[in-house]
Length: 123
Image 1 (cartoon, rainbow, N blue to C red):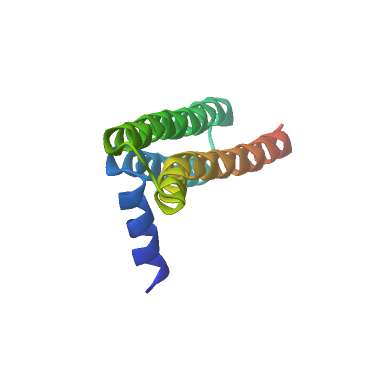
Image 2 (tube, rainbow, N blue to C red):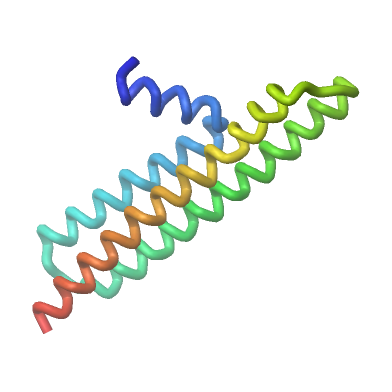
């Protein structure tokens, strides 16, 4: 199994409604970063935008986790019993969205650091 198919599988496991927007935000952040590197203009606005997008990805991921946990507990309640394996699977699924969000946040922070350093060089 290739890395790409593993990432797609994890996106589908975490709930496409929450994981795919986070992945799109990642590509938007990377695109904005590259565009601003080429354009070399006011880094302040770009830094602010990337910061907001990174925080949104984290919030979206934790919101997805909350919905995932509610769904998992609803399933446990409906069945009346559960196994350790099903609980572990539900918790794993609930943690995928925050992991994606935190990863995007870290990429955004790395971009902000790079742009801040470049901005200081031009000042």
